[in-house]
Image 1 (cartoon, rainbow, N blue to C red):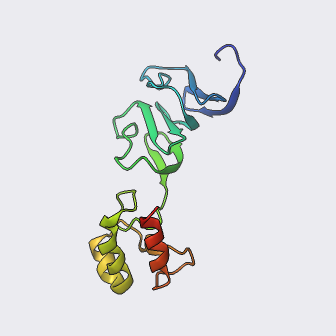
Image 2: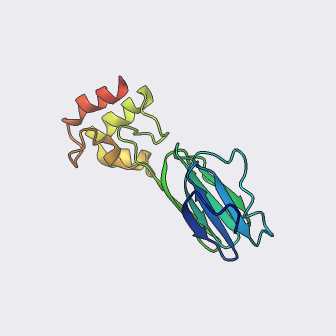
Image 3: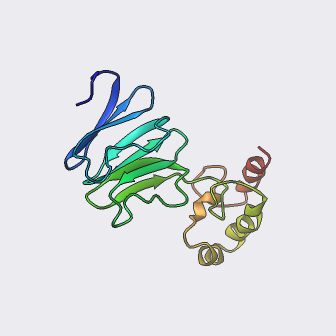
Length: 165
């Protein structure tokens, strides 16, 4: 256990190591460190959540990005390219999970709402089956810009509002 043993707002245990999240957004690791699972990569700031896996560790930053370190034989320490909009993390024995934010109005799933989403938005409104075929990994409910639970013509004004922010 690191000293001083103060200022912690969260803890997580891996197989033989532990992580502590400090109030200042930094992470402290201790215990067995044969794969670097306790060595937080720089910059060690801005973390809001941590999770210890068997031989790897995850940290979620306030900006929604995921940082991973330690053992990586199965890709558990290789966050996906879209890791900038995550809400939660979980590290398992040799796996890692992230929960991605759904960005309302982002119809091509590039994690931003831009004029590049206009064509996919129109397709989602007029041909939902065609939209699903062209964008199988992008939920059609991203077109639900007025947040009423369905995709319809009422979403147009809200979509335009998202474009002009």
